[in-house]
Length: 348
Image 1 (tube, helix red, strand yellow):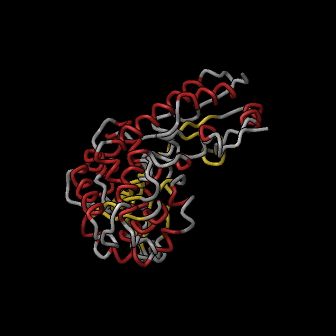
Image 2 (cartoon, helix red, strand yellow):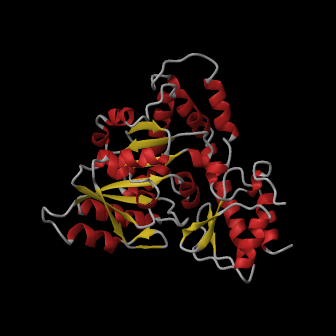
Image 3 (cartoon, helix red, strand yellow):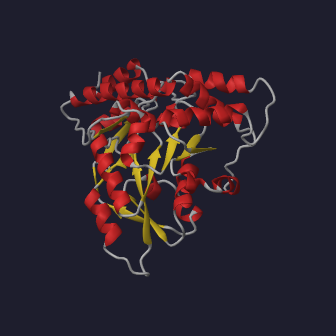
C-alpha cells in the first residue's frame, strides 16, 4: 500500500504550499495571539512589517496585505489598469492560467494579451510588437507588463534581462507588475538585494509571496509607484481581503524578515531543488527540459518511473511544464526526502 502523504510529509513535492508554517513565522503568530490589539491593520505588527519592507526595498512604498496570491495579482492589476486597458504577460503566467479570470474581473474587463516567451521568460520583441502594432480605439490599450519571478518554469530573469525589460516598459509607457509568489527564491538565487532587483526592472508593483516561503497565510502587495496605491485599501475591503485580525497575517512576516529567515529558507529550498535536479540528471532515462534555477525541478520521466513513483505515494504535478513533471521543494524539504524520491525513481 502506498504511504499516506498525511503521515509522510516528505512525499509531497506537488507544491511548496504543502509545507507547514516555518518555526519563525509560527512563533510570531503565537506571540501576536498573546494580547488584544487594534483590528483592521491598526496594530503594531502591521506597522512594523510595513516599515521593515520599506527598509528592505530601500525606498518609500505603500504596503498592503491580502490572504492569497490570486487576490494580490488581481487587485494589483486593477490598480494599474482601467477596463479598456490590456496586460501583456507570458502564456504560462498565473494571470492567464490560474487566476480564474480574477484580473479581468477586478479590473472591470482589462484584457490579457499573451506574449511569446522562452523558458518562461518574456521576449522583449514580443512585448514591443503587442504594445505597438495597433493604436486605434478599437484595440485594448496596453498599459501593464506582468513578469513572474521566478517564472512558472522555475527559471530566472538575470539582472541584465530585468534592466532591459524595465527600460523597454517605460519607453512604451507600460507599468511593470511582478508576480513574486516565490520572489524570495529569486533573491536567494540571484545574489542581488531585493532593492536592486526592483530597481533594475523598474517595478511599479510587486506581489510578494509569503505562503510559499513558510507563512501560514498571506501575501504582500507593495506599490513602488505610490500614486497607484491611492484608494487601494478600498479595493481590498470590497474584495473581502481586509482581515479584521490583521495581525495574524502580518506578525508572521515580522518573524520571517527580522532574522532573514525568509532568505535562509528560500536558499535551502533552492539547494534541495539543485540536489534533486542533479540526481535526476544522473538517471539516463530522465531529461530535464528547463534549467533548475530556483526551487522547481521539471523532469521528463518515462512512464515506468511515473508509475513507480505514484505507486509508492509520491505527489507531484504533471500539467504545468508542457509534458514534464514538476517537483517543488520548500523550506521543509530535507535531503532525506530528496534522496528517497531519487531512490524510488531509480527503482531501488
